[in-house]
Length: 280
Ligand code: PMM
Image 1 (cartoon, rainbow, N blue to C red):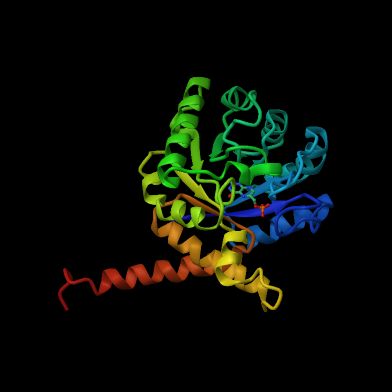
Image 2: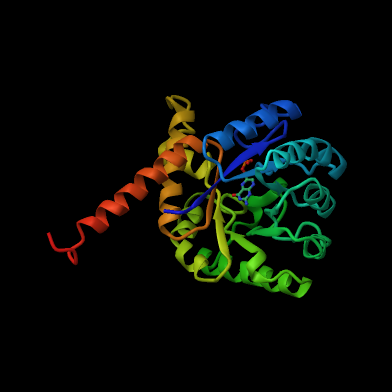
């Protein structure tokens, strides 16, 4: 199982699960190095929370948060992506050493994003997105979640091609939790093989998201061991996503997902060994 692990380095006061913990650049850099040592193949540095209900951050503030972190992690040889919806931040991060621009809005939030990335050598993550986090659930209306996500991502691939970014430089992401409620996320995850079949590499981020907490009842006031259990749930969905053929999974707890992927890989080898075509 060769799925890559993208470790999350949020340099924000208010991110979904780790907001405020790594706002100091030195703490964020140390966290990134820890995730790399734990087995992250990629480090995703973000300075703007996309938590449901959150407000936009000024690009200058965003850059103050992320650029020193991107630079320090790239300098030690880490493969860094920058989680941003702003073209100016994307360009500054690539100049500081980022190899991937991770735009959860798929280039929709900033009209300059696609042409800006086209002019760099960076790869681009196109997330499925229907509107800003402030009111993202207002857009959670789907005829068929898988078909709608696929066709909307296909139009973003087309827009990227028009801007000069070929499919080989693209990574699609179904945007779990972005404008999708509860079961809509499970339906989209079930459709991952169809997204993989679209062509470009696929990234998926389920880590610590609300739909997992809802499924396990971790949002209830009497829930126990919430943090451990949401990371365990994330590790399970990461394995299932890997089995669906995704290129990478974006997670906060790299160790849990790395262990889960290793165990799954071992299982697959065992399966091959005992397959009926093999003579004993
Ligand atoms: N989710 C979050 C932030 N960035 N990027 C991609 N490509 N895919 C995601 O699913 C995604 C993302 C929100 O989670 P966080 O605030 O806990 O980092």
